[in-house]
Length: 227
Length: 227
DNA sequence: AAATTGCATCGTACATCGTACGAGTCAACT
DNA sequence: AGTTGACTCGTACGATGTACGATGCAATTT
Image (cartoon, rainbow over all chains, first blue to last red; front, top):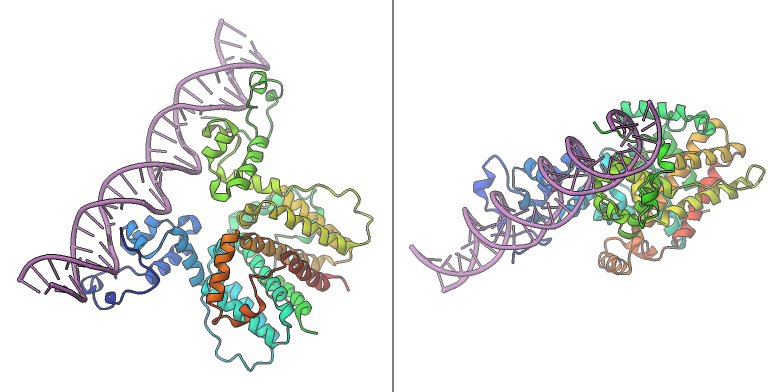
């Protein structure tokens, strides 16, 4: 039976592959597969990622991918987590402005996902990758350091997580092309007699997404702040 | 070229089909297709819904579905909206407890989606169906009636929508089977040295989902309440 | 030097999917 | 009697995920 590559890198493959490496296409690797998957997702969206197309971009055969990856689902998992890569903030521990930090962390999180809109629609179904966990850990630590009691930490984290996830998913799915937007507008005004209040507030049409995100976040933080 | 059925019902099909109707399988109809799709989604999940399987359950050929439905996407759209069907609350207009009403509406919304966990993962990608719009309209009306200024309505609606959507999606995706739960637990404790705060607060493990949902919602409503 | 091992690649094949196309059925209308 | 239009469905096509086994090639052992 064929051996499957586990998490560990092979020791040998570091210095071999000279034939391949000096050629046009560098050899396959998990990193290259994931990076190319992200490219493909950015370019073609979730449905555009197929194992064959991914392999084409890598200059390899489709089945070669399966040496490095269990199945297509894993490609999605890895692509998602890679997009949420978290770079440790330089100074952090001594800051007093916990609220500013939290806002910054969550806005950064959201911005990262909006840079790759497919990631928002993927997130719900995926397990927690290391980068997401790292972000949750830092969020917990910051809140805890700000004085949030352990007993309240769970509620705090979930509220924020839910809000950020929802806001990002919503934003990503309503970030329509101009054509779609025009169609939606037309549809809404056609139906406006049934939804007068929506019409009046111009929901879905005039949206300051970022501002609204920030305001709701502030409300949550008001409630979550230690008294 | 084959005519496609548009939104309107055929006038004739009301009284004909006697041969079919008295038989074991009633004739195909949009309603029956959608209802069966929901059954299938409940039973087998998103990936379990295929046109062939759906047709099997309906006792018809796969291609027959396409008379009633443009494509598979539309089936998803219709199934989702049907799950979010909204039944008008009897008395409502005169109530003074706007906050209780909002909480009730949103908890009902969330409960409806959690009864069909596939719906949460579908929601982000779908257009707004009539039932969702109806719910948004009622929410807007209630907030507006409570004194929320038109200018603030947008932020209010989006904050609540985002929060509810995020909380529902999260809950649905973490509502794991016991096996998955055990695996997740094992995985987390194995990694606990890297995520000490998460470990301490037992995030992901001891969760009072409903309670946390309610608390975060209260925080939002505190912020959104007209002064 | 020769044989063996193990990592890595890939061609072929299969079941399954969404759905295009066109033929078929049957009641209602002219 | 003939036409129409609503509806059903068999067949077929291209695309997909991936199981399986053959192949190549460097490192290691003999």
